[in-house]
Image 1 (spheres, rainbow, N blue to C red):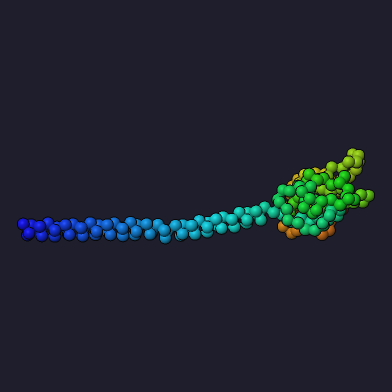
Image 2: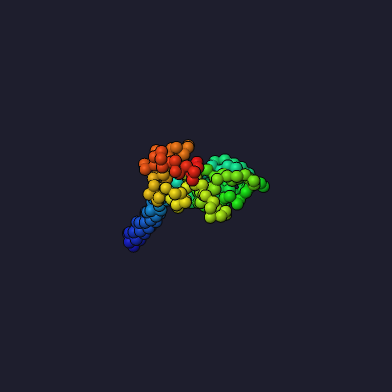
Length: 208
């Protein structure tokens, strides 16, 4: 009987050791299974942050490309050069320059006109006589001549100029965009199709 008891006792010890081994093995299995996920998450988070930074830089660059530069002078609170949104109107530009001065004469300004890159906007004071700006509808009679500024005029503005059709107007604008604003009216002779004789007929209708 003692031999049988000893045999059963040995079997219990072996069984207990097996159970302990399984418990320890299961612990290490679970531990090693969880650890890799904890090392992957920071990498994924870092990649997400890099993507967000890259996207923000792209968005900022796109916004910069949508801005233009204009020069605001005359009867405004803060004359100077400003960056404004593309397709902004003169009214918005005036607000950017601090608003109108108390002596500003808005009757000579078309506030709804869209501005263009490198355009100069001049706000006259009351009592000041200036040429009618491009895009401004004259309030005078039908005999009043409209003087068109060749540095700001659009194709539609040139319709009021006798001797400049749509095609020639496009050439003037293309030359202006490529070489910058005209310094004098005589610079128009650099545009294909406009010579000295043509300029002599146009000079009373144009200004810079």
